[in-house]
Length: 279
Ligand code: HH2
Image 1 (spheres, rainbow, N blue to C red):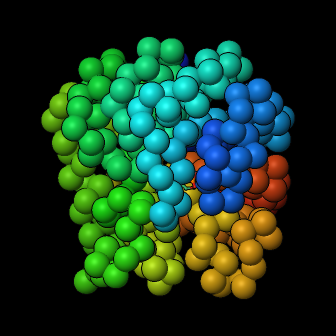
Image 2 (image 1 turned 135 degrees about the vertical axis):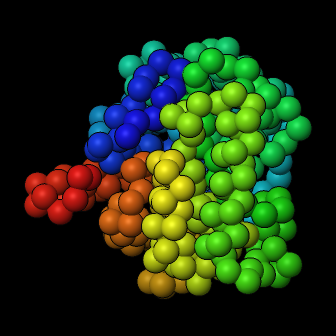
């Protein structure tokens, strides 16, 4: 199994760690820490030293209630950092939902479009489909971040069936538009319009998503469900995040989107050494 992207064909026989670089003033766990380009560039390099396989760079916070930046504002945040990251020799992903930002990032040579709205904004799918081989991560969410945790958006009959059905449809729409299956990765969207019990059901039954045949990306890092389970604030969720990441691997995830790269890489090394799975 592999993930075809602009410059790299990423082998997924080994679990890959995607390090998060939030170039935002307001992200839920690290808002403002890497908000200027020089600091974000330095963070990219730190994550690579810690063992990240992929860098995921975003300029919009999707925490509940965060303000949506304009495309121009988002581009001013991320393009300088993407330009720098593309010189570092690893696959680079842009975390965005705006077609204009996707197009500008792909013009720079960025490898992957990671969209929490699964290319749902008008024009987004076309931007990715027109590119010959950029990778794409399609994530499940309902509504918009501002209101996604409201009661209407978190009511599910069967959350796993709905998420799997939604992602299957989105992947099919991309395939119809000419995007090869090997370019597509799916993500259940932990914490996006979901209560803790929904996130935990998606972990327990992640196999149903894996069975669609696309690689699965899991994003549990520092999320609030881990705070609910452990009673810990966001800056004390590293052990819980690593445990959740390993549980996701056990359930078939091949890419882990994380803030705490070194801790995750160490945990994967122990799993590999023990021969527990093809991690
Ligand atoms: N989670 C966040 C952002 N982007 N992309 C994917 N594919 N999967 C995720 O689970 C995911 C994501 C939220 O985390 P973070 O980037 O740390 O926070 P913020 O959105 O506040 O910047």
